Length: 355
Ligand code: PMP
Image (cartoon, rainbow, N blue to C red; front, side, top):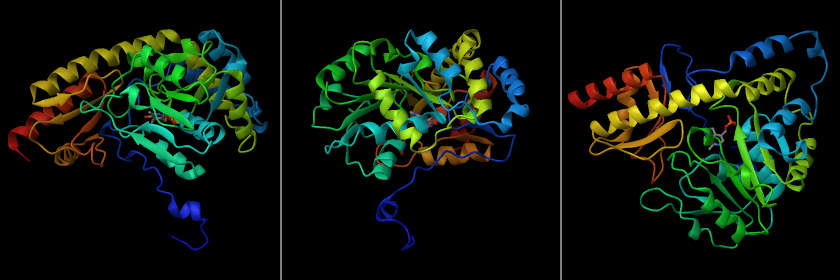
């Protein structure tokens, strides 16, 4: 704390990112990255972009990448915004769209960056409790609000809502933006992008960090009515008018266009997720039904914190989030089959020894 900090920064509780360990032989199942990496075509495009043209600024509007996204989503480039990871896109959306006096609404158990953005931009917020099964209850999002944010599938639970529920919310709040954060949508949930033409209050945010295996490139995007996108562009141009560098634009475009690679990686992860969920259940875990590349699980009689610590001693890292409704759970990224098998073996050993 410093007296030089502005009052807003003094009050801010920053987001705590998941650990990115320096040791390379860990089995890393803590931050929901893809175990398969990006499309080889994306790597080639990045290599090709790494030349003398790097002395020039990047395209400030990332047109090529936005065209690729527009083509696949059946929208126009005016419907598409890109940024440095969906975290940055979300930050711009909170700042551009949510300051109407009433609180921003999101679930009590969800992506923990949402309250941080509210703190950063001085936005009041209210959390809406999930039900006892950690499910979103749409009917509870019925308070006056400045906007509603839902991760779908939700994180860290992995539970997805159907489009019927999202449509209900959009129709009930026509004067407010409903932001659907689809970081994990490719792993079995339905995207709300198909609703954009009918709902000018819908903003959908996606990322290249998960199913496209490019967390290290930092690219995310939003799609929505051109008026919403224009709001984001206004904030972007007042913040960093060249958000995506040349390598990111080239790599993300190639990754987006390689649907075969996406499909293969997603199918493998979804198959491993079902095997892993079954194995965890056999070991005495309650496992929530996941539509994401992670599972949320708690053991019937072992504390999550001690399990996470015991796994770490065996060179496997998973995510244990503190907090009243999350501290008994572990969020485990679905890795390769070999990584999942190593996790299950380690858990068997831990549970047998009772350490
Ligand atoms: N939304 C959710 C729900 C997430 O879990 C994450 C990843 N931590 C993000 C957004 C941000 O992802 P990125 O900035 O890598 O696109």
